[in-house]
Image (tube, each protein chain N blue to C red):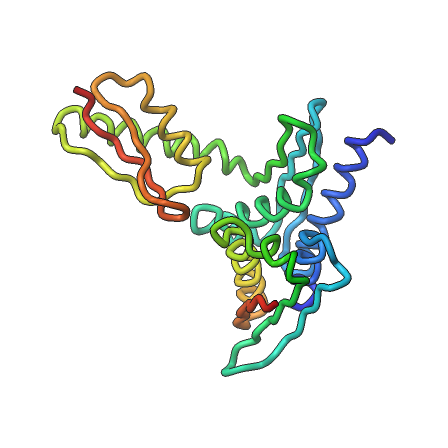
Length: 76
Length: 154
């Protein structure tokens, strides 16, 4: 799932080199931690959180396919 | 290769990467118009997943792709995602819902409020009501909660 979030984040931001994605297993869920440059935070969250919501929807669909639960956390 | 063709190729590449990295069983067929608009049509086993919940997944993929290429599409052009004629079927469904609700409001004089909808769906409702006499529409609420209301026009 790292690749999916990385692909989307790198395509959206101004500083793709500073995109960092880590997967952490926690309580039977896979937490996908996304870190971007401070100036790029708005690009991955979007107006009224719309971009982040869209990423979460794609992540959830992928989870349905893989029978896993993914949670996206956006960190600075 | 001209510029718009180059963009179409890059959109195609991005959508294919999106499909493969999300483990979705889908294929994307990409086409572009003279005005620079790009149409992405999906086929495959995971269409129900793509179109379920009012096509939330289709819309999410479309939204992300539009954001990514926002600065590159020609002015007035758009990137549109569709599958199995979903957009047209949805439009017909919304128009029927709008006509039914308008008729109810016209007779009862009691306002009717729709469930929250995205901007595209709200526009379809507004347009369907414009020419019906005795009713008018308004939108209320913010962001994801924005909904169309049909009111009696006095």
